[in-house]
Length: 139
Image (cartoon, rainbow, N blue to C red; front, side, top):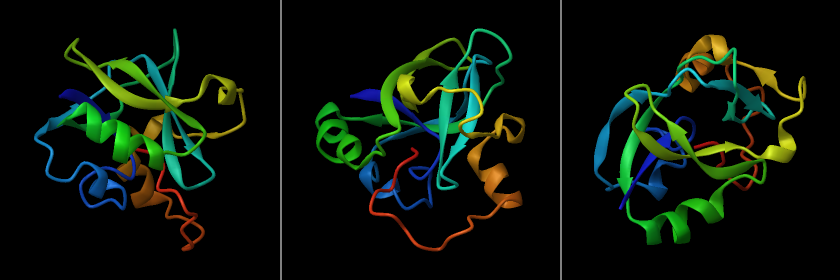
């Protein structure tokens, strides 16, 4: 089992939580301040590692079996995201979905770092479309 940090649809109550439902909940944590947070297609968030100008981003950590990560979680991810290792605020490491390197173009996505997390952002900026697009994305 590995720790998986989620910050979008896989949060408790989110549409993609079903892929990790039943996995042990480790806790609510924040990333180290080495990340920007962006909104992709007004549908899901993505962490963007940066060397300066980052902020801690809130999320949840779960203890997930590798086969479940491989067979259920990753196949349902959006193409803009890739699996990576992040640093949490307490100095420990966790797997997380990051904005794919080829997508990290300044100005391409709305920067929502100032909200500190996806739920805070969605509380103030609801989705513009009620239509789901096939993939759940944005864990």
